[in-house]
Length: 477
Ligand SMILES: Cc1cc2nc3c(=O)[nH]c(=O)nc-3n(C[C@H](O)[C@H](O)[C@H](O)COP(=O)(O)OP(=O)(O)OC[C@H]3O[C@@H](n4cnc5c(N)ncnc54)[C@H](O)[C@@H]3O)c2cc1C
Ligand code: FES
Ligand code: FES
Image (cartoon, rainbow, N blue to C red):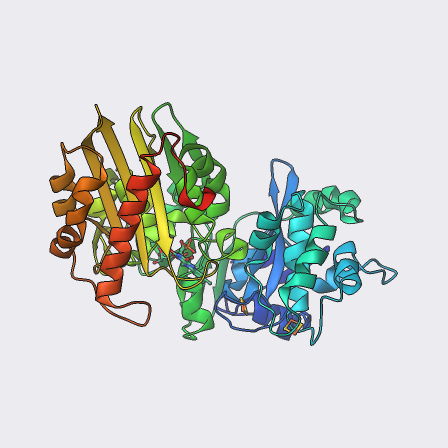
């Protein structure tokens, strides 16, 4: 048995008397009495609970904003936890981020302000420019009901271009202090167990030791069962620290993304090889969500509106499932077997997802339709990989989410277009072809007819975008 050990605003802390299912937010507010961090929605949407976690990566501290309402307490083991109470100087001088919010008149009731402060603190330390789109993205995970976003965004722009605060001098000491903490948590409280193995071998041993345990990666899906549904989740094995699962392996013809790699860490690779996949991932939740959530978790959840799944299917990605006795490789397409069902067997873990790079003559694009741009679950997701030879379609892989109980390819449509010129002529048939492939559900996000029309519209858009002299996205026109 080990305690959860971390640094709280620089001070070493140890906790062994709280249930692991207590959220970090509840622990901060009720045990540490740091009530600056607020609970707004308890489901990762509002950002009022934003804190910044520092993790030691290659000797220095990597700072990232996360939603404390979704995190189980042991997930902060070995982290430097920064809350709004820890930003002002010892003499009470406001942090530059706090001062910028004051100067821009960017707070009224103040309920959302601590969350904005922490999101902006992470942005400040990221050294990003004051670019409107980047500021928008950095703040998309924080909601304000009263001030309006213009002054908040103005304050954020003032603290762009990198850190100029006392933390510049203090972070190396924090990183050293973290390195002095024991690594790996083996936490028990009453009937509850939370294990965080650090290697695949240790993971498989833990899965034998606690065969009924739930695997937890970032917890952005599982965390809702605790924060919203108030489940205890008594037996949990965290994948977050498993070294082999945290790797991204670029190869000549593919990239391999480990089963515990966060969206944020995968993004530079997606941006380089599949920019449109990267742009779509930037619309999954918010930075706070993407700093915790993983592609493997999205795949394992097997939701019909999981945004990455159509992309992985269209790109002909494969998934490596590992267990104590060996491993098997499946196309992502056959991994997802039904509504929130997958081929993952007991004792198996998603070790990696392998995405083949685009070959010469191939185009790829992904699209998300939802009711608002940020922080929204998809109504329809579409991903297309097109291969042309001599102006004709050699292969089209067209995968859709939101049209059936699981993300899947439009086989009738793909078959009908094969060998035909990539020209608008055949597009007249696509509504009928899609209707043969899918019988969508209707719910509050969209009716069946709307979903089919949206899906057809996205294919028309892809045809247009790939038929211009210079391939481009419609947004750029
Ligand atoms: C506010 C909010 C907004 C969101 N927005 C979007 C969105 O826009 N689009 C979208 O698609 N999703 C969205 N999500 C859902 C969620 O972020 C994703 O599904 C996420 O990718 C899940 O990954 P995770 O690491 O957090 O998984 P976890 O919550 O840790 O786990 C989810 C499931 O996957 C299993 N699992 C995780 N990793 C592995 C592995 N390596 N091997 C085997 N099983 C594994 C777990 O056992 C569990 O059953 C949102 C969630 C929130 C809270
Ligand atoms: S309380 Fe709203 S995101 Fe955590
Ligand atoms: S200042 Fe009131 S919610 Fe933002």
